[in-house]
Structure formats: structure tokens, C-alpha cells
Amino acid sequence: MADDAECVVCGTSDYEVLLRSRDRNSHGDIVRCPSCSHTYVNPMPTLEQISDYYNGLYSHKSQTFSNEQMALARQSMRGYVAALQKKSRGAQHCTFLDLGGGLGYYSQAAKESGMTSTLVDLDPCSIDFAKKHHNLDDYFLGTSEEFAATTVNKYDVVFLRHVIEHYLDPRALLQAASNLVSENGVVILETDNNRGIELLIRPGSRRWYMDLYKARYHDVTFMSLLQKRPFALDPPRHLHGFSIPNLQRLLESLNLRSTDSLTYRLGDPVYWPNVPDMKFRQVYAPLVKFNVRAVADNMIDYCTLPFRKCLAATGHASGLCIYARKAG
Image (cartoon, rainbow, N blue to C red; front, side, top):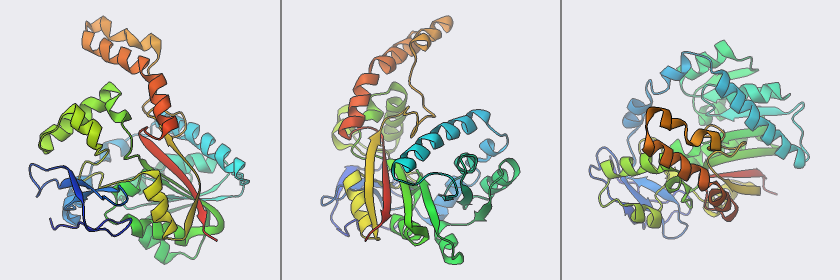
């Protein structure tokens, strides 16, 4: 691993170390730019380390079509379509480009909504799965940059759902999106919100990140994570963390202008439906197995929902979404 300490947003070479790695050859430090608050891994993993991590990572999900995952994608897509309609762009006759779309559930939901749908992903298993289980208009095996270099097509909707945080070079990804979106088209960009603290509020996500960071980094406590907010970086999976202001700044440098932005909570029915809110009838279900700890976690999860909704309204929830168009 080689140090790469230049901020991808503003180019600043100085940084503040948020979490210091126990083994920098395996997992780099998590650092923050003092100028724009972009967070990133330093040093970055090598291409070989990233390839080793992702090789076969999602193979278990590509064995069987998931009706539940398809239903959640359809639910989400109805929300995106409603947002597009508010921006004077309906789904009918739109061209939809899903960059880094994985198994293609969202691509298929877009197709069912009336759009011409294209899936791009660099994982052969994902593309094979999509060809077998979905009825899309086009498929491309490769990176977003490779696709942009090989097509003359422009797209009405370019969809980047939780892709940018995985990229070694987010600027190259967004440059490809800028090249691919039509003059009146929309880029929908989602990622984790590095201003968020919600991941420490829900018991399941809090435990997951506490365990992860304690195993990999020095001096990790609940209060230190609450103060430093390294979320949701966990190399070699997530390599970059953004907030709405610094991501808007990066988009503007690539001729893309934010027209709408929001932060959203875990369990949001449109933007994060795969971790649904706790229902009251579920709170006491673990008592059947005498699991008192699970009941306590469920109660906390259920009772903190109003607070987590407030976090979304104030910009401190787990995810962010930006709708952007060509500048000028």
C-alpha cells in the first residue's frame, strides 16, 4: 500500500487522522480533509487487494432470484419516478443507465416503470444473473469509464446508487456519469453520509461498526466514534465518505449542478428499504427464545425512530442523495 493523501474533492494534501489502523498493510488509516471534510482511506488498498476482496463476495446472492429484493427495488423505484415527475421528467420513454448496478434489480424496476434500461457492472456473476433473471434492454460487463469510452449514447437518467464510496477514483466515476447524461438528463447519486451519527443509534449497525473498528483500529470507543464520525468507511469495501456540500463541490468541478439533495435514514421506504423500521409487534418476538438482549435492542430500535427521523431532517442520518443536471 502506498500513501495517497490528496483529497479527491479539493486537492488538499493535509489531513487529520480519525482512526489509526492496527495494520496499515491490510487496512489503511481513516482520515479527513481539513478543508472540505471529505473522509477517505490512507493509504488506499491496491487493485489486487480490492480484487481479492470482491472476488466471489456476492456469489451466494447470484444463485437464486430474490422476490423480496425485487419488491424492495420496485418500491424504491416508485419513489424515484415520483421525484423525476416533480422535476418535469416522467418515466415513460426515458433511458435509464444503472452504473455499478450489481444484480440488476433496480435496472429491472426501472424497466417495469416504463424506461429503457441498461445495466453496467464489472462483476461477471452479476451480469450473468441479470441476463438470466431480468429483461433489460442492454448489459455491459466492465467499468463505468470503459462503458463511457465505448458508447455514443446519452441517457436521461444516470443512476449511481451506493457505488461511489467503493471507487478508488470517484472523480473518474463522476466524469463518466457527466459524459453519459443527456443535456436535460438527471444524475441520481447516493452514498453514505459522513456527517451522519445514525449508525450509532440503531443497535444492529452500532454493534457492527463498533466491532469492526475495534478490531482494525486503535482507541475506538462509542464517544470517539460519535465525535470523529468515520462512517461508513471500512476498507477495502468503502474507501470514501462524503457529505452533501463536498459532494456538490466535486460534482460542480465536473460540470454537474445539484438541483435537489436530501439525507435519509436507515429504513427510509424509498432510499434504504432493505433495513426496515422496527414494528411494535416485532419488539417482543425474541422472548419466545428467551433472548432478553434482543428484546432490549428491538425496544431501543423502535423508540428511537422519531429521533432518527429528526436526524434525517437535520442532515445527520445515514445516507444522502443528490439529483444533479448538466451545469449551464
